Figure 1 (cartoon, rainbow, N blue to C red):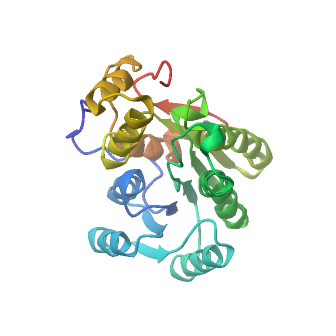
Figure 2: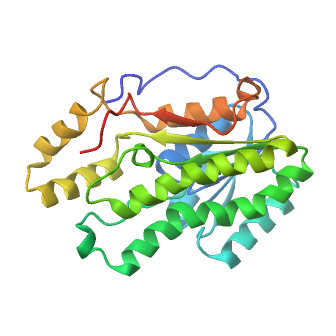
Length: 269
């Protein structure tokens, strides 16, 4: 369990209040935690997600939040999301590319082409789909920030999770390339690499990996924690607060960086 799960409210960070922010897959999990933290900092928040029920809950929870149904792999849906965003806010200052899926857990010869493509489409191509629409708006605003969600699997090989790891390594390349391309336009681009984030999604990952490895769920969980220097998982809030720092004035000179929020994952089992 994350040590600071019930951490006190984050003090105001300079430059966040009033920013116009879009978070993909922002209705639950890490994305919703990011939306909550930025909203609490005074940002104007828009989220898109494929889960209509979660979107409705998020919209009810965050006063003034723009909640749009949209799949990051669908060009028409993304056009609609950005159209709604500009109609409501008229400006974009921050894009958080958070959408991702776990993908299959299997030996490479047992992973179908459909499973492979689906994982890369959401985790990597989805970031391109949002970014290509966001960049003209960020340039028009005089600059801004993009935060791309990678993973500990974006710096360590991950047996039986090859599509996911390949996509998350790709996010690092995307981030570093965009930082160079967009820096002259005052647009900062960074990646966050969460480690083992406590919650239902991680529980499912551990259960599937335990099945493949022929271990109990408890034994597999112990193996995961043994790979972390701090011997604990992180929380979605830990990741969200790092996003807040990156898009604030306190992070004004951070670009092209890959920040691990993981308790120092030493390897992936």
